[in-house]
Image (cartoon, rainbow, N blue to C red; front, top):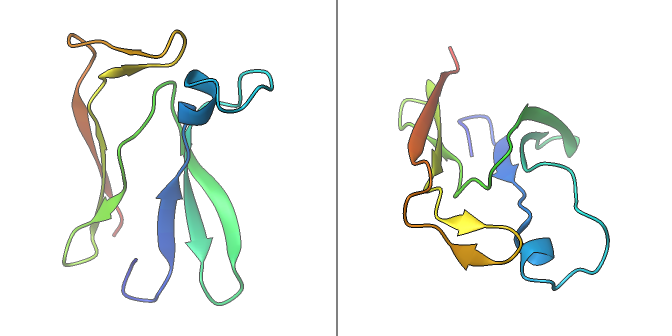
Length: 92
């Protein structure tokens, strides 16, 4: 949540990858910004892999998005050599 009460969230393909959801592959995971006063959301970034959360720096100037790169979607398994990265976006 930022200093104005707006918040960020992410979705994933985890339910599809674990065969919890039977529909076709969903769109790629995205990061959403939600304006709290009107509950309006918009996609601010789309990726090819699952993200592991969204974090804002204490000063509210940097948005962090970590990715462990461990999970594969289908078949659902772990990849110990998956790409690992921490994305940082300037919000000022």
